[in-house]
Length: 370
Image (cartoon, rainbow, N blue to C red; front, side, top):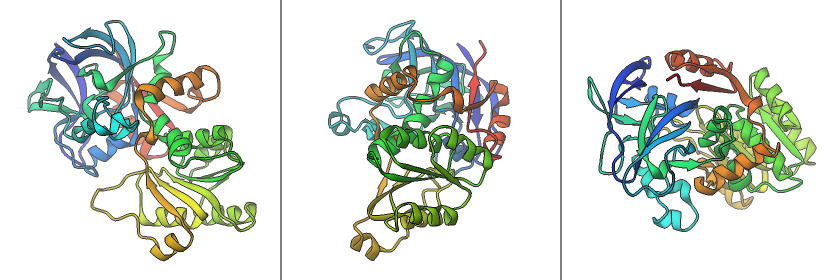
């Protein structure tokens, strides 16, 4: 069958819309009709060459849609199911899945290669075999993906909202609730209020933090943070540092969650300085793999018993945490509608990312037309 998709051919070049051929599902695979996709910054890391991906690649790693067909051996979903895609597949049997760490499932090793187990490339076109971002490539009208990448959700959930729970929401939420282990009464500093940071704000608030300090240079982002649970918002790390020192009587924050679009050593140092004794820095944002971004005093790390932790997918387990987080949305405890700034068509993907990079959107959502 044919599918229209947004493809990156060369790092630094504009994303192109291409018509590709798509194979149907084989053993353990499903055919999904994508209805919505989230415009998340990680796709720009691929388009700009920050992450070393095999090209050409169909972008998009947040997606939701309807299962149209299943291949032999599929047991997790059936035709007609509403699903949210997980950008990290979960096999359920590797060492990490079996010990409750699905976010580092061994199947995730190939997400930047973009092929299904085999290896197999279901999408082909004028330049041969096309990979799919995180094995799902949600900037396509249709996708053939592994059943390990989809999670069934309730039939009454609006997919245009549920789509965000494939990456940005659990990554931010879990960075606070799971990785930072925010507890009632804590002081939490969150650096960068985009699609991930805004959900770290919501997670810290829900976990009971007394002070949720949002740091972002853009006023619209700070305003959204205050709307969704932040108690304080500052444009710079310096302003936030002074306030944190004051509000904690000199003790420092319990945790600093770093969710900026491009991680730098300066941001990590600011987070490290913001926390007090026994505090935790959570590094969630990315940069080029070869750029060192953690360059802090090892002596202070030791003497103050500080911790620096990496967080992928917010340390969430997709099969259980995607439904759990959507349940919080259904109960009104987590806001999704309020963080969607604008929707786009597939053909408007470059405009959507221009808006993201310009800081206009907290979250943009692509609506697929069929």
